[in-house]
Amino acid sequence: MTTSSPVQKELGHNIAAVRRFNRLYTREVGVLPEGHLRSPFSLTEVRLLYELAQRRRPTAAELAKDLGLDAGYVSRLLAGFEKRGLLARERAETDGRQSLLSLTAEGRSTFGRLDTAAGDDVATLLARLTGEEQRQLVGAMGTIERLLSPAAPSEPYLLRPHRPGDMGWVVQRHGVLYAEEYGWDETFEALVAEITAQFIRGFDPRRERCWIAERDGENVGSVFLVRDSDRVAKLRLLLVEPRARGLGVGRRLIAECIRFARQAGYDRITLWTNDVLVAARHLYEQAGFQLVAAEPHHSFGRDLVAQTWELGLS
Image 1: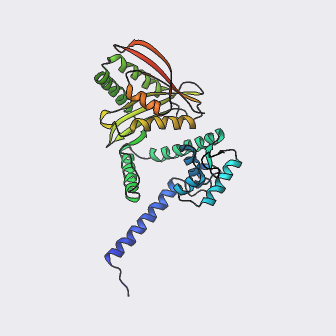
Image 2 (image 1 turned 90 degrees about the vertical axis):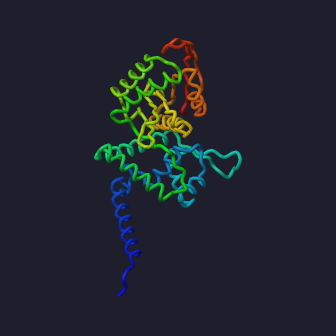
Image 3 (image 1 turned 135 degrees about the horizontal axis):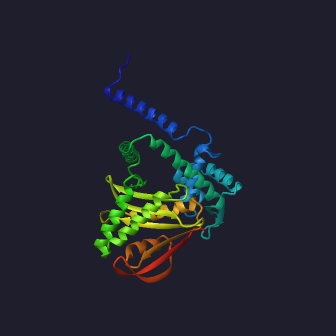
């Protein structure tokens, strides 16, 4: 009769625990149904659409390599997307054998619906948990990610949607930081309070978002994307705490606004800022925004130059 050593017993227990977790997780996130997210697409097809939506004109070879998929299989999936009118190809100038891929307007719209459905499913799952339980869950997922992919670059912060209490923090920190760094008076804090109140009263999750950046359990940044018209979105209230500057928080917040605006079907993003906010203006330029108007004004106890910036999404 063969007896197992303590090490073998522990390994067997750990294997069973991981498999049990896999069964739970695949059931909860809806991986098992043939049509992922109640769509005609498989899980692999949805993931491929996600990569196409996030990248700037990748090649099929790049997608296959990064996703760990057979190149022929990826080519067949891409051909299917093209047949459905979701994918456009452009011959690469440096290598005529390669095609640069991008989603068509229909492709972006399709992915937007899938992304919204995925977000809604996760929101439903999280709604069963308290705020503290959600933080525990996200922390445990971060631990799994670090242990299984230690070489992968990790951001020292996380982004999440707003929750009760966040608007008060946004107003308070804008008031304090702009007074300390630019000498603005309390009328700016009043403006921020009006903007956040308007956002909560008229919030449309299909076309609007607030992202809060969190580090070590504390808020360190925020940004809002709100509807200005059916075709135009407005970026508002970008803020990064001094202790979190240099971590890429501002760039990431702006990138999330651009990504969501495309998925929501907007044609353009506009924003209003002031010339003294040099660091923020630099981030907007890096993201592709262009200055379209400037006008001097006296607000918040200071003489300022207001600036309007725009980014086309087509």
